[in-house]
Image (tube, rainbow, N blue to C red; front, side):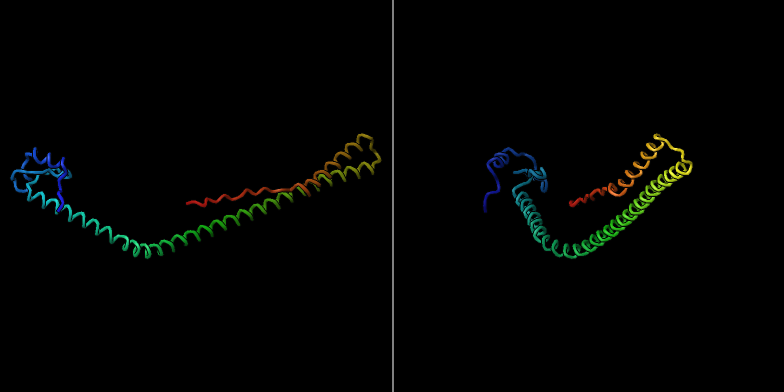
Length: 179
């Protein structure tokens, strides 16, 4: 059996003068862990106790991986089912939200296009009425023609913008792939 004392411990044992914490005989060593003094018999018993406790720890640790595998396979399936269910619900809610938002945007675009078209039509009706009035009364001058021409040009510009420049910017959806 190898010696359980280092040179430092042998030196310490020589100058150690406390009594054994178990039997009150003169002590020969002090445990660095619990700081109790021990006689030679009780020191060996204390070391045996520590060795037994440590062996139990090693044993307990050795069975944990098996328990972990058994436990994790059962728990993993239940947790996985719950997590997948939660993800499916999140997906449903996200799709519903996107669908509702898209529908609101479609309706808003229709409203804006209808409003803009109505405004252009109202402007065109107004200039048409002014042109008919000027023609009926046969009362127009260069300034009237210039003014009506500018209004008609503006209506043409507005109509071209309505046809070609209606654009919508849809921001990309940023998904956090880390969780």
